[in-house]
Image 1 (cartoon, rainbow, N blue to C red):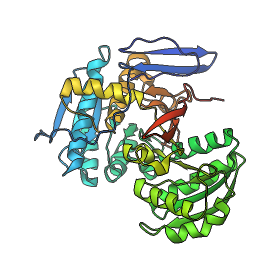
Image 2: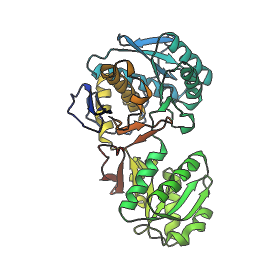
Image 3: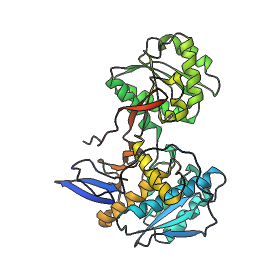
Length: 401
């Protein structure tokens, strides 16, 4: 992974060195973590089922102890995904140049009680930072335990409600997708929007961010409608007339729902070549790309080059494909190793973790906000001819003030 800062960026070795660049009182953090080739193989192929493990195992033998909390014995795909994240953590240690850390692996079973007890055990064993849990139900109690001890958490949940000061989410949050696609549309002089949103928790989060992003870009929301699963027709009817005048129609939903809306809009006389469909990372899906109804549509998502390289190295080591979220574990461990190498006693302080210059990982640049959420630098993709292509590359640096 390459974890890099943006102020005075310097060349770093493939294997992962973190360097500092300072100007006066300003500290620019640059971390380059682990072999930074990459890209994105979107594979749901599960890792082998996890073997029965003791309550605690260790990866590495360094002096700095780091807790890694995952639902290793959870049922179904959750346990397989957890094993893939564990493997990715091991790969990060193997690729980093002599990291002085030991990963203390804990199994939370995917439960709230497991999250709490795993955090308590990890802290009792001297862990200075916790990576994970994966699920929000376990993140909340683990975070409460850690915060009481002044220990930071870097978790992998996509539920922004569990983020808080000292509990950071290194995950793909919809806010970054929305901000990126709306700002790109505005750059293309497309500033009038219609939105059709799923009437669920995801839709509520996305709607709030969408309204804010459009306002900040100087645009207008001409119409907005919500729908329940499988019931898009009435919502389309509410906005079809204004959609004919809009520059973009925002459809933050999965393939089936978005496809139904697009076809219904076309039937209502909306020209999707003029009113461009725009979406989130939910469209980063070969099934979406193969459907001609999405041709010309735009969406925000990571540049997949990073994940592909990571997946190749993962396969070479473990003989299987990583789950998509495995890059989060890889980046978290790489970041921690780099901070240990360069930041001394302040390595896990809030000031270091929330450095506005951010870091660069498998999926591009990212930075933690003080409220625990994560901002990512994303690419804009356009769908066509059965695939997608990048029409606006991921930024190489964050704008800092």
